[in-house]
Image (tube, rainbow, N blue to C red; front, top):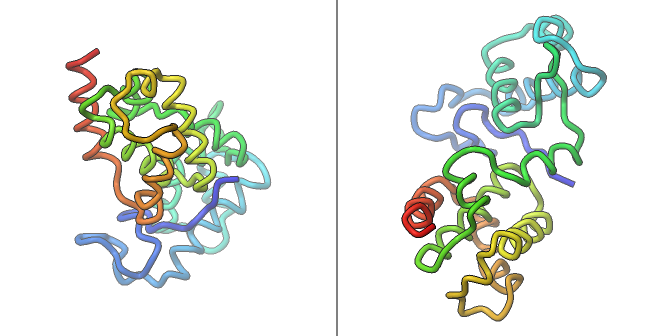
Length: 195
């Protein structure tokens, strides 16, 4: 089951140490959590229009609530269907984020990696799944499956004896919470030239 943390809706930190220029730096952490809880509590009961959500949320709707809703939409935890916002179940969320749809991750996921960018591609895949909130076990399962299904493992160029061993060696990426974008862009560049 995906874990759910309450990241700052601007810089995504899960601590009181915000990124430079974060518009919520100094905001009490309880207020950040409350904004998420207000949104999640209402939408977990039933789908609502955005107007209905604002009216049903506990207390007054403010910029922090708006940013929390935007973050939940961006991270695909909340979707809009027929004009109503809906909170995805844990299973729906896992299925939704298991196949990256934004570039450069989509290219890596769909085409697989090639020798010369394996390290960056695997790093990006592990970091992506950590970022979207999958557990280590779910991340490992998804990346191993991707290595096999995309043809990446069959292309060779690995020192490890199995896809599982390769992914296990990237666990530090998951635990540290490194970003995925730079590595993904570098991998996509090599993949686009090679395939």
